Image (cartoon, rainbow, N blue to C red; front, top):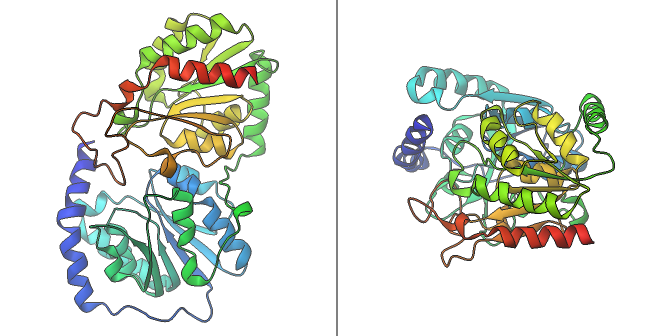
Length: 380
């Protein structure tokens, strides 16, 4: 957490002056290359964003099949990016390393310049290290977002307005507009790429745990290391689980999450008392998503698993406090969003600039609100 805070501090207070300095010396390319063979996508975070960007990569690959797509990722989203079949080459870096080792950044830039990309898409919404990399890399054309008080657009050859009133899938797709690519509504659904091994594992898991003829509901209490403000209380999940299994005898509950979430999920499972399994941290993300695919419902805060669940066709109930579900909710027509009723929600646009130091908006989402929605879904 401390490393992230330091990174954000330098990205803002050192990144902005660098952007204005580079604006003086870097000449922006005005013409789109006639022939586009090598494209770079820059996106360091996060897991959910990597899922929501899949339509961009799919459409780019389908409309320009000869283009070789490179993707600049980080340890945060590498696992998801590595599963994407539309990417030809992944360049994975640790951006935190550049803070303590400027020589590593210089060597990295030299490597990037040797690749000579035709077009670079900067899909980062707030981080300025991405536009600095795009500017120093050797490319014929750069495309990125124009956002309020970010100033990154000064360095792009072409930019598109990022809208807080569109879903992020739509914002990402708008990056294709300067190339004359305008996708239809039937080609915007995100995907998650499961392997045959992951599918077989999930099938066996469901059979071994006698879940094939049950209504399986997944809870994921955690929203990641920096997502505390988006989390619903553990005791709410426990109460919700008790009420569900008491009313519906055919329901089973799975608790999912990372290794560090196992303990809290174990407590929730014990508080529910029956018809519950804790699989947090026991499998890879891919195997967990394959299990979620065979489940009936996922309930969680605004985090990556929300988008992964929707991308494999599982219905979701997303719990939203600081995040706007119109922008960051599951991109699926069957998705249900429950929004806090506090007057200042949603307050978060991009990055981690919450409206208050200790957000309490998730506390305003009551167990009754979620329980009644589940009853409605099961009844249907």
